[in-house]
Length: 96
Image (cartoon, rainbow, N blue to C red):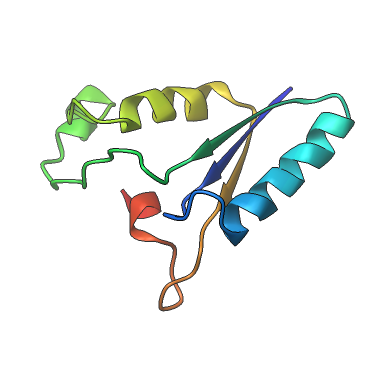
């Protein structure tokens, strides 16, 4: 089993990252393979609304970090997402 933890906070070592890492640590203690990704500092282009992803089954925006992250999301068996809340919603990077 593999667990991927993603922190959507723009603060690299903020509270959201600490909480996601705490979950991953419990998984590691149980012998489960984990990986942590912080979106802080990542170059993720916003959705353009072109809907080409419906034709290609993949985002057509290139030259950013999202493609590599999405491959890891698809490969993991369990996904843990942490986000600070802004106005009762997840942060913008996670909406993309």
